[in-house]
Image (cartoon, rainbow, N blue to C red):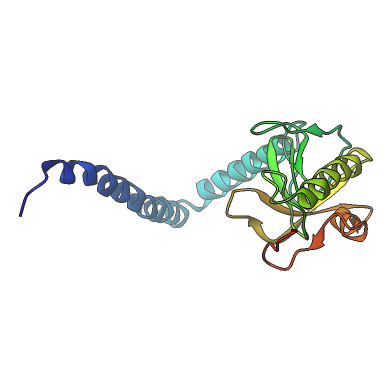
Length: 192
């Protein structure tokens, strides 16, 4: 049997990465133990530390609400102007009938399935996909929206899963009513 010396060299980084990842839990446990010990040993000092931590958390919350930062799910967002995304990520642009970028976050409209445009599988899907993309853009341009959390935070592609609403009404439902999308059934279905 032939021995390949590069095999072990190629495997070594993965083992090292696994070991590094495994240390994170130990570090958290150690920090928690030190915090507990300080709380027991010095109750007044621990209270001061907690007050400082609470003040820092409040500052982070306020900074998260600053302009240009994506709002948490369920928070009404100011009206924006949307373009079409032509390549890669974007700032306030529509990718297709169920995906758009807003404030640097890619969002998947969670309650619908729209025709594919990248690439469409037939002429009818291309036509419907283009119409759904333009309609979603018009709906997003029409005023402020609220992004409501779905059953999961992100999909397997890293897109935020949100139900997009205006005045409590789903924009996805509008697309479904107009025949430009389907209600999401848990998986994609062909449009051809």
